[in-house]
Length: 246
Ligand code: SF4
Ligand code: FES
Image 1: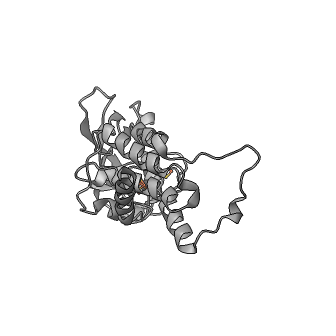
Image 2: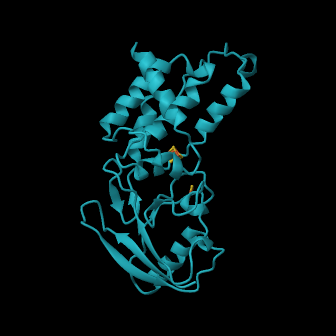
Image 3: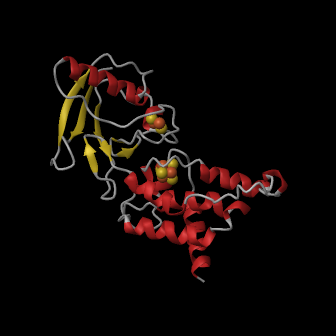
């Protein structure tokens, strides 16, 4: 496949940035999107130009690093996949592909396609954990009965990889799907009950402090989430917050 790429280039956080056109040739439909980006970068390095900066780590849908807005969709045109899992067979020979960084005030661009997602880390630090008694009297985990439904729902929430596609997709740049998933993974389990009230209050407060917007139930986040995190998690977070405040 021969393709035209329109890519957001930005030298640093202060630079205004602009779209730049590139051509790539002989792209195999079996390549992943990031492998196609590697081909472009090899081409740029060989011609003495700056390669395009983009985030990636695991390249297998686990780390949540590969944040790219492709043809106006977070993680591109496929569903239930991250950019590293997106195959070039989703595109046709001669296509023009637009590639931008996540768009959200709380995720400022650092360089090209790389954004600063440390706001998510600070939300996690505010309450996304449980404290464990390690005095030697710790209760064996298997001695606490948990219903299959609660365990499965908590596990589904725990599959959130913190990629930020929900924020990038939301017209309000809301982080409520992410925070809802993180609150839910503990809210459904007995281990999460001890700090439940503080957790939801602190995480929501930090989310607001970071400048993320509110949820208006459009549901775009759920559609673009590569891990299928459901809007039910936002409803659960709201219920948990109401409970904590009462
Ligand atoms: S909820 Fe989905 S889209 Fe949002 S950070 Fe988690 S995995 Fe990514
Ligand atoms: S590089 Fe890890 S999820 Fe894409």
